[in-house]
Every structure is written in structure tokens, then in C-alpha cells.
Length: 213
Image (cartoon, rainbow, N blue to C red; front, side, top):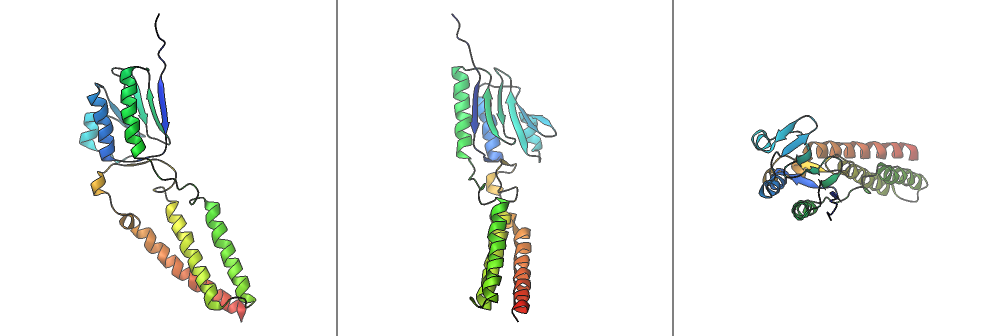
């Protein structure tokens, strides 16, 4: 009697991986006896040696090997670890890979990066503050503060909705020690947002002042 072998598949949460992590995944495969390892992105396929020498700039989609059996680590839109057989070796390798990837799980920004949430926070706050100011329920100064705070929140949520923070995998082909801080990564966007906040607050205050006269 022969046991029927079924493939192993593990689907995981979104991850943020650095070059160190990719190298660790390749090391796991090589230490477990895998050869003919390929690293793929949308344009090219590299052997593990070529990958270490070239250091591609395009994000990775998949790491595969077919010796001693087929195994793949998909890092495109989803995270998927697949082994074509269910043996002790396959189980051990998949466990090591999934343990590494679980430690790199991303925090979910799916709720606060929802565009409907941004507009639902921004537009009503402007309308309400204008109505209250026009009816003399709140002061002009309070209305201006409300507009200013609304613009700040709106722009913060815009930053969080950038590809770097949205709900997807992030593969950064640099070693983690070289990775820039939040402020360095978003320097240009933060400056533009600050200018937009100042201009928006001035224009909103001016319009409300003119209407209220």
C-alpha cells in the first residue's frame, strides 16, 4: 500500500520584506538541499547566484525550485507558499519559510486608507463649520481651526494611501539597515501637503469671511 502524496499550500498575510529577508529565504532553500533556484520578477528570471550579483531593482514576484521537488514562494499580490509533495522534508521547509514570513507581516491600513473615509471626514467638516460660522454659533477663529485640522487629517490619510502603505506586499531590495526613515521617504510629499494645508486654510477662511460679511 502506498500513501497518496498531496501538495502543501500555505497562504499568508501581506508582508514587508527587505533584501536580508530574500537572502534568508534563499539560504533556507539551499541549506535544505534545493538547487536550480530561480528568482522571478515581472521582467526577468534570475538564478540565485545571478540575483546576488545583479541585485535587481524591480520588485520580486516569486522564488521557485524544482529539485528535489517543486516549491514556490509567491510574493506578488498575495503571499503563497507551495510544495508539490507532502513529505517530512517538504513540511520542514514550508514551516521554516512560513515562520520567517509571519514575522514580516504588515500592519493593515485597509480601513484608514479607504478613500470614502477621507472624503466623509473632510467634506462634512467643511460644510458644518461654514454653516455654524454663518449662523454665528461658532466663531470665525474656531471655524478656521476646524478647516485646518480637517486638511491635516485629509493629507495624512492621503500619505497612508500611497503604495508604500496600502494593502499589498512590499519588497524592498535594500538591506534593512540602509532603509530610510519615514520622513526621508515622504519628504517631498510632506512638503507639498504642508503647502496645500496652508493655502487651503487661507482660501477656506477667506471664502467664509466674505460669505459671513
